[in-house]
Length: 281
Length: 321
Image (cartoon, rainbow over all chains, first blue to last red; front, side, top):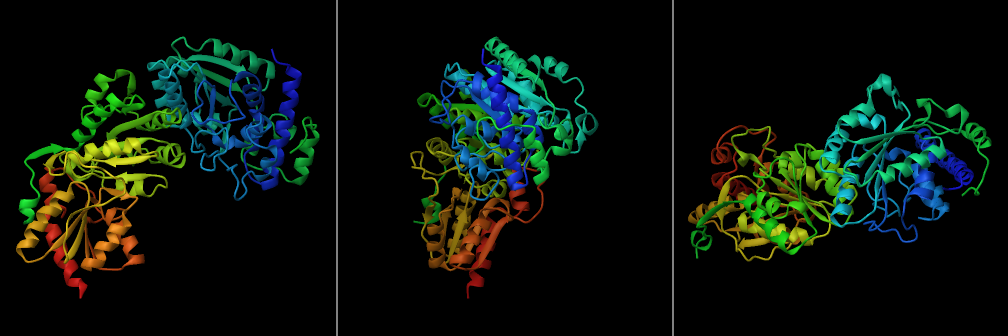
């Protein structure tokens, strides 16, 4: 078991990175990024097997991750950089011209760690299924992870993919939904209620788990359990309850910070709640 | 030798069978080749591949968006996915999936589209896409190929497997004359000159290459000597071949089973307007949808037959002076 305190410390630094990145360019999506920080830290520091020294697109014998809700790129970029996929100084270039760190993740500039472009929602589960099939064909023991937004569940393609994966026994796939209950126009329950998402995915024959995505210990425990459930004929779906903007009091639990950057004072206020732990970039 | 003597077809086959037969053949030799289809396995002629290589074939059901994403994932994992569906569902229906997950991500996915154009026939305009070349050539990284007969489709299918990057391969439903060499070498981006001429350059693609040859027979009897060029690859366009022929003849006719907007003619005109402006006449559909009917009837009604190419040639030649 990992040292929870250490992982929490890393998460605090990642949150600082996220805020400083979006503040620097005055654009980007801090809310969902902050809400998913524990998940990304757990995934890349504890759960996945991979090599960050030499990024390999095909990911042979590795676990691979696809971010389908590409707008929360800041948290992913921070964790990739902190894990050594590229230099942390590059975080300064986020969303700026001539950068490999595009607003939404893209492969065109060859940023290590990113395997497909995402941002237009609903596509990542299908891509993850394709990668999982590739691993099955190659008898590769790697696990494929994907992350999605709860608002993204409104896209039709998600349900095409949700139907395919159990039908074709894609059981080396763990798809996670960031269930923060918020989307751009307001609460998911008002914009387009998802109903009983757990029951829906269970009805599609997924193995459905739930966890509190802002509790590091629970994320680790649930994800480790999920891993033991792979290879048993069913894909795994995890409903990860989070709070958008978690870690910064005035950003928590509101859709207001979905796609808005903090100004100078707000940044100062936010950073004062998140002490520097690993050193800023 | 006259056109009639030079180009002979003793057989009629559908181009989609050229694709299906080639896929089966490649399946034997390349274990990285995967087939995916969205409930049109028979129409796409992918049944033999599916039966022979059940482990490398995925029936995804009527879910083309998912199919494109899965193909992108398989390509990421190092496989060469060939996705098959009707041209309408392979492009218009899933444009954003093709754009983001395949073209922008530069995935080695082969989008194989049957029933393209108006010769789909009786099913009508809902299925007769004539915008697909425009949609696909608008995407950076995408190669666009429209072979003219069974043999060329067979050769093109092999060629795209060896090419790294996303490809849109367009073919059709009806049985059409087979007239190209069964052992031809298919070079992506290299136009094929079918006949030398001096009066007009006729650039044709897909099913209309044969129609261009029939038109040439007629033009020959009127004392006109056309140059016929098969543009099987619309993107990247063989710009050298286009300019060289236009320089020689001084006027151009383009012929394709597509709308004027966005089609091969557009691609050719765009290049000529910058590098060697000459009169260009289009044999293509002018900003309207198709309708139900027999393929041959539709080609006549929508101005895509040999007489339309002959008329366009007269107009182009007249504008030269």
